[in-house]
Length: 416
Ligand code: LLP
Image (cartoon, rainbow, N blue to C red; front, side):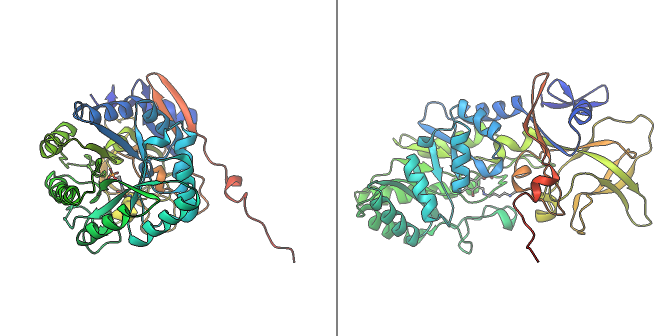
């Protein structure tokens, strides 16, 4: 059963009514279910038992310390893309030895911090990055473990903004250049070749692009083996989609089995970098209707959450279910544009939603656990929402609501 469910017309998260949470902590509020998070992590790893594996949660999808700490306790590693994310992982009690560092633009300072922490692997995305890492590791008297993120040129069949495995985007090294890069790396004094990495995109709902990419990675692993460059792990990246509306992504077990079938008896560790699949459906954004504004062509429900809190609808035209927190009996429904108060026409959370609501009602924007808070901003000088974690019948504040004064604390006016 989902950890978000209706009971007597009220939406619950685990054993707590979302209405009570809104009354206690105000809105907008991100609410996560601890059970949903831990169940997702357990389900992801269940299918991988019996094969050497490491699940590195993609921190960018939800960098909350409490969530990182929960996954760390369950044995997770982490996929990071910045020095800031490394610092978060360490602050949350994560094990640096299980951290893989992705991203096309690692700075020298970020490389130093990661080498100092002894991370598990750098996922290298260009020849220039390899040169820099070798130099910095040399200065530090270290040997940097690396994978190359290869671009397998497969179509992930997802939104173009979150598709990363095609030739024409900035990610990874070209498949045809990979062997020469591995040869170069294997001769560098301060580089140790460990793995092959790929990540082809996000919110994938079919298995075939993953398997096509894996075939190309395995071909590379075999070529490298013949050249005397052994590979210890394959990093398959993240990307498994979730159901926002009516998508039918592969179940974790099916995904794991299909991958294990291809790996067969190879003695090679599998690394995964799931983000959305572990957190997306474990969180909602709770908001209150400020005003209803009927119109001749559109009715607007103006809520107190906005594009700065949840950017996905504005940025990708993404769909999130919007559900009443308390269902009304006998109230006539209408079709609404659910919009925030931000001064942009793109500030919407949902188009054409049929809702039986009145002013002051609470709404839950579902599937907001991934790329919700992590992509939020202070646009319009709006403090970021409070974050709460429900655990059974308990509600914990895991990030306090920002105060307006926080937002200009680093600023100053110039003297005349
Ligand atoms: N590994 C790498 C190298 C990545 O770039 C990403 C996501 C992941 C893993 C995790 O992917 P996931 O399992 O979450 O699909 N903001 C967009 C998604 C951007 C994904 C960026 N990279 C959204 O809200 O849909």
